Length: 413
Image (tube, rainbow, N blue to C red):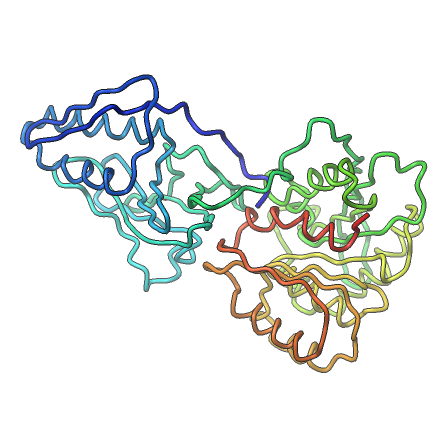
């Protein structure tokens, strides 16, 4: 999944025995802990409130917490069970994230239970065994990162904590291979767009050894400032790694920034990506000619791809089906087709029969229904496409981890 900040497992301490009776909890350790299973953990957790002596209860709670933290078991996961944990004061503690649309899904009871006579809060739920999700802890009105969970995933709004279920496997190609030579990521350039009526910024990646190359394929990405960020889309890391490994042909990538270059707090994506004919004309009439004239591209549709996520996934679909003579490949991640539902009719009415399509979506708090509906239309049209569902949310953790799949499908060597 990505440019998330990955950390190794803590050094474990092995528990020789743990026993508890009301009023006392004893723990004996050798240099390495074993990770607790669910039954052991729940027994220990609930036994804390049975300890009568306040001082002994506090010592036992601290010992259990330290053991969980050493063993990287906060949040606690086993099979499909997840137990979120927080140790501290508060009137109300809850967990919000991909799983409840960041508090947008009120049908999920995400409130924590305080263990009696302790400062430990917990919330038990279930996820698929291989899920990976972003979340934050909400203490009264404050949203915070989980202070004892070392796993983070960055979003466009900053970092979130990350829960990884037991069978989740991180994508290794989002971490740079030390031997992989870096391509050249050019500084931002501006185009004064007649069609959009304002300046638009973009940056270009060219592969290492570009000087000796000719007729390179080109990938255009919307939300380019995030796709190119190592903490988010990790695209440049994945590009360098795949080219180094000989998995893909060298490729030029154009990262188009939807933010106002004069005020980057103003993001124009909601207008630009909403089936905007003028934005399409900006690409076809203004941006692509500049790129083709400035770089050693192969200027044919079959060697040109468009990539986007969420509203950008809607945009990629619109570009690909409106102008197949320009874009022969389209990568559609977590598509927000609900934003412009006429996109379904555009695809239903197409005479296009040979596009190169990649589409993916998460199954938890993502645009799953939209993607499945479009998948059915693709199938009814007899279109050839790749489709992937992952047990994740609407997150750069999912999208970054798919970059190798996209690049290999489009530019396999």
